[in-house]
Length: 474
Image (cartoon, rainbow, N blue to C red; front, side, top):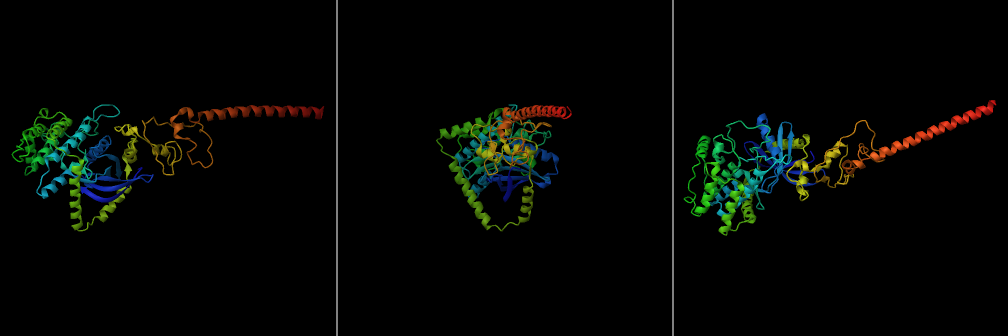
């Protein structure tokens, strides 16, 4: 892999994966914090689940939006699978709600609306995303919008994470009919009934978030999973105003439209719900910004650090060291499939205006260097062992094929490494009329002249022999 990853701490663990904070270090020495998501070993034996996990990873490479956690790489080590993602320094919405509840409070109305507006921006982007190669819609549906999957940074950013249950036409393996996926309390009625879902299922989930943040209670929560699913199917929505007098009829109407049992009665797009919420804030002159969210997140972080200082030291050093060993042996599945996806440096130093949808629209010159036996090439084609950047941001041209059995471009020069005589620079590879063909032609002409001179010399020697013989025996 082009980057080397080191685990620094365990962040979280769920039913399907565990998440670590780590550091990615590139060949040029550039370092950045990343989140490393590792699928649980107990699930790697399930080939179908692994296939779904890889679908998530490949799909996530297309998603690049300010309100969606960026996925940088996909890795495999023995039977373990990893996602290397953007690290969001903060907390998730679940942690924030629990912190407020512990203080006897609930999320304020403006803050709740702002968080859902930002979530709608990320969903709208994903719902409308097209395949960069064919231009066809990918029909992405998150299907798992819930408090743990909404991250809030200490700078007040709102980001969606874990498109692990996303559905796209490009999925390798479609899910079984009638299988219910997602957290039961945040399913849509059609999903709870085993029917096909579209982007309006995510609109319903955002409606659930709004209802719960406004009331401080769970909307669909039964004693058993079956009871919860039945509550979702019925989609009976209690009055919000009865539980929170601050909610006026206009705002309750917005939430109820998002929670309509029939998808045709909901907002048709996430952006429509976001616009309705934004209009409500403006009409009520409610001021809220990322700065307000940042203050809430930092309070959660401070409380977390306080509890961590009081807790006994964890004894996971052996397990973490074993996982670090796995991480150190990661093999990039993206590179194996020759998908020219964006690297961490591409995301950080991407040229404004360059394509951000198609991973293959970025050229990683280190891959070319590997093909031709070179360690690194800079953007001008020179040797780049001094630590300069080796990333070109431009539409990818067809990769040149090496000729077989033909003459090389020229004789190796002193000090050149093996393989340097096969390609002089990136400019030569990109411009065929400058790839050394003229040198080959020039060498052929020189050979022809040498042959003519040699023939003339042989003729002159033969003539001299005859003259000498005539004089000797004449």
